[in-house]
Image (spheres, rainbow, N blue to C red):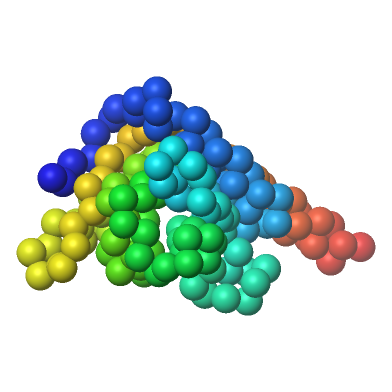
Length: 175
C-alpha cells in the first residue's frame, strides 16, 4: 500500500528515528554540506546512517540516503534490505528513490518535501509508477517543521555569508 504525503507528525515509533536523522543532517551542516540526514532501521535496530557528503567526498552520489543504504547493506551482508524502513529529513531525489527501490526498502518516512528535486510527491511520484518491480510505501510530513527549519536555516546562513563577503569585497575595492 502506498501512502500519500500528509502533514502527520509521525507515530511515537517514527519520531526517535527521525530525530536521529536530524542529528545526521547536523553532521552534514558541520561539514558545509546541505544538511540532509538518513537512517535505515530493520527490526527496531538502526543498521545504517548517513549524511550528505557529495562536496567533501568529491562524490555526486554521496547523498544521505545512499550513504545510509551502503552502511546498512554492509552490516547485513546483502544489498537487499527487505523489511527495512528508511528515515530521511527531506524527500528523496530521483537517484535516491531508484536506490531505495533496488534495495527493496519496505517503507520510506521523510520529513519535508523538496519542491525542486523531490521524486516521491513533489514531482515524479516515482514509487507510484506501475512499471516498477517494487513499490515502497512512503509517508511525508514526519517532524516536517524541524526538518524544513534545518534546510532553510542552512541556506539563509549561506546567503548571509555571501552578502557579507560581497560587502567586504566592495569595501576592500573602495580602499
